[in-house]
Image 1 (spheres, rainbow, N blue to C red):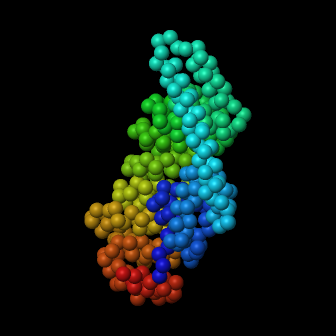
Image 2: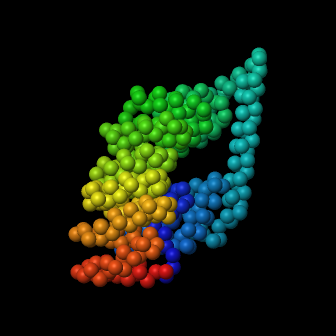
Image 3: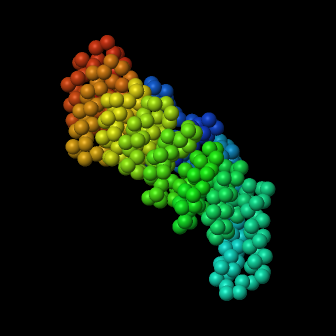
Length: 364
């Protein structure tokens, strides 16, 4: 049987988000070859090769629409299109380097040149330009603004692409975390999610406690952003609070799943607890998370996970039993031994589970 990958696996291995992969699917740019019995996207090896092509073309500056044209039309002169984009990119880099040189001279001079002062004023004008691409270039210029001004720009910028660049620029500043934290306390609800994401990008040790607290933010989008950010930080202290929210419906379980898998081994004990105590859907997600961290657990933690998953095989919830069986298959011989010993009883009255068990036990 050909190997396939679920959307969570592709996201975890590539660093792309599920949201990005779903967006590619919706655009028809990368439509997964198959769907699982649970309607999960399944990506084939050909899909992964196409994804590599998409990312390479994106890196060269093509829009998603242009990428779709390149991939859909073999007769399209891709080399000519890429050469044009490359020339535009090189011209933009050269212009940015000239601006950076002027600002550097201005910063280092005892008596700044008035020509450089005028250039700096021009740069400031660019940063408030009506064209978002002009603002984007300005945001990329080193030392263009004080950090608190970058934060202010982030909170007022309407264009998503420019916002992403401002978040990146903030993360490069030594005082980026402090400036972001200062703004977080007074920012309106609609802006807190942006600041949460910026704070996570800084990698600051100050971020963890603030992000954990934000899981209970009254704005659900902020709570979701906090979960995503904690996953990117791989903050072990966040494992318990994240697992405790599985199945509650306030933060989507797929976001919690990704965050917990990113945290890895420290999430095992909280996931075992959630496997026993969370609402029904949350228990299934906990089982999936335990499957995905199986290879990173120490022997004692792996044994505890196998015991907890084995207990779920006796549950009345058929979906949980399936999730537990699939997770046990990831735990090598101990997991397979549990499945083999339970196969006869588990298959009674549950044809779907019987088919799954035969497949799991026949896979080397």
